[in-house]
Amino acid sequence: MIVQFIEIPAEGLQVQLTDTSWFPLADIPVSGEVQGTLFLERDVGRVLAHGTIQYLQSLQCDRCLENFNQDRDVEFQVVLEYIPGVERPLEVSAEQEFDPTEEEVEYLSEPAIDVSNILRQQVFLSQPFKALCREDCLGLCLQCGKNKNFGDCGCDNAPSDSPFQDLGRLFKSK
Ligand SMILES: [Zn+2]
Ligand SMILES: [Zn+2]
Image (cartoon, rainbow, N blue to C red):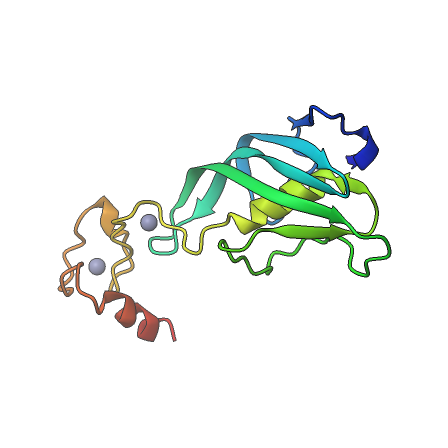
């Protein structure tokens, strides 16, 4: 969905996306509905875009490999600046680096906003570095491979709170 700068009235424009057509489902599986809301406010050659994205993400735990769902409630704010003839159009990239101390400014080569693109980018930026089914997930037994969240397997393991637990798994997986 494209919104031209001139289509944004003085009081701002609210855009609501209730379908999943814009969502990067191939990269980020979800279960259930996706909600994306975007407010656009215009200021001469710039537009302030802020909004929220809500979805239930389907993940696999990095530690115990169980599948689980996690609620995501993303709030974001981006400044979109139109610079005639700017080389680089707005692009979505999963590997994009994000510095939260910097104001996020996107430069547009045309005075038009690709709403789906903005939202998609925010979804990527809000991905967690680590997927854990719960903070204190016990993970898998290094010896028998059983999920220790479901009870003790009886193997003679080091205590689960050992700082070397993750290290041991690293060596094991090689
Ligand atoms: Zn887990
Ligand atoms: Zn075991």
